[in-house]
Image 1 (cartoon, rainbow, N blue to C red):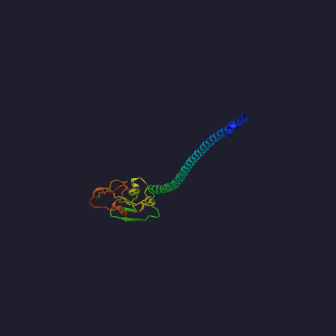
Image 2: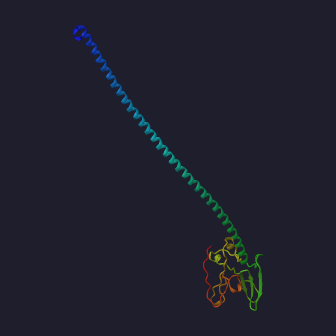
Image 3: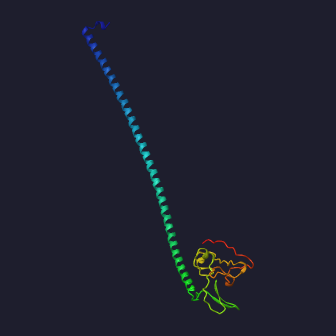
Length: 239
């Protein structure tokens, strides 16, 4: 009833005030909506940034793992190279030792060849380390020098060359043998020096003047002769 008593101007002013209030409320609502939109956008952007950082971190960890793997591989390769270098050094030492041994063997072979050449030259001399024994028989004269012997005619001449009785290894591998027991080559190699008996059957006289096997008259130590038997068997030794 009080509103009915208002004049038109007052009603108009009240209406304008109400309209302004409605407009302000609407504006405030729009601001709230804009604020909410900005907040949602900010949240989405923040989430994207976090995901980007997480992806970067994963990529860095993957690269670090690759680097660690490569370092481990390089370390293993370096270890292999060091082992191969050590093996090559050991092989070089072995080669040097073999060269030294070959040089010693060459020197020994030269000395043996010179000694044998001296015997074949008819000098009749023997090294001072060997002993000689002369036996006189009714039909022949025999000179025994270690493992070598020579039979001469009854007239006492000594023109036949001394026969060098080789050990099995020197014979098989055509090595110069110094007739020692053991010979120099077997002694140098630490091998068992074995001399083979001549294979003349039934103990008949050997007709080979250059025979390098031991005969009964040579009286070579360690060689046994079986009466009434055939050739004495022996195996090929390893040098």
